[in-house]
Image (tube, rainbow, N blue to C red; front, top):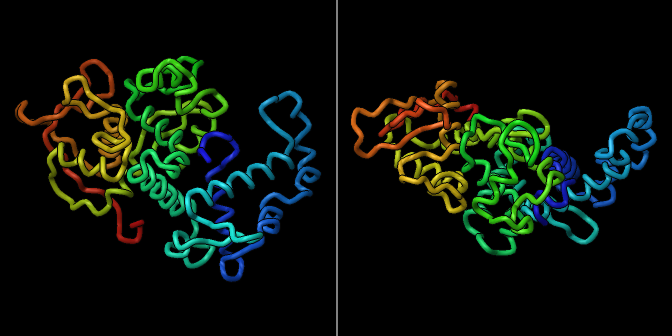
Length: 319
């Protein structure tokens, strides 16, 4: 099951389902009971006062129906990613979950986001072209487009508005046929606008637009990188291993014209990390063995040869 189509999978609903399964004895729960717990049949009646203006908004479905559908699709996504397994009529947590958390209360939004991202990256980096890869391909390829699209300071929308157009960006790497795009329409772009920020790979500008920013994901995934000065090319290599959509990663789309630029998404993320005090981008003293950090603003590019990595994160915050 792709993560963006159907568009009813919600990452936070997935977390709630994991918590509900773990709250049961033996981390095992009848599927019917689980779905009823998450999306009870009486929800539509309870939410009627909030439905008064639904006829004016064609994007909103019936509360009871959509809630049940979200729960069911989100559960299928958990199974596809290996968080739970369907054993007959029961849903059981897998070792992926049990090896990470001991109780339901430990399944926080931050820790779930990290493990969810880790599972997606593992599939994206190791199962390219396989059935497992098909489960995350649309999401991973869409993230790669977001990371490689130039002018990262400008919000990107699907095909309307004053910002960049995601539909046009996709054609550069996937051609003009919509059927070849990872995100084929605005309906699929909306869940992408939920997924990318949840995974720590973008900032939402509105419910329908994003800017690339993987600073949170990088800070968490590069936690074992020793503090100190590191060559820029070596830093890129570390990023490519931890974030497959990043420069030199197995799912990256970025190919700089001169081979000397960081991708727009990585440039944006590095600037964000520098502003937050987690690294420093010292200006190169020569043009030898250097790379360019640029956000697409004339005169604002920085040429560097090294990165001073000093993340401000305590042992208690380690993933």
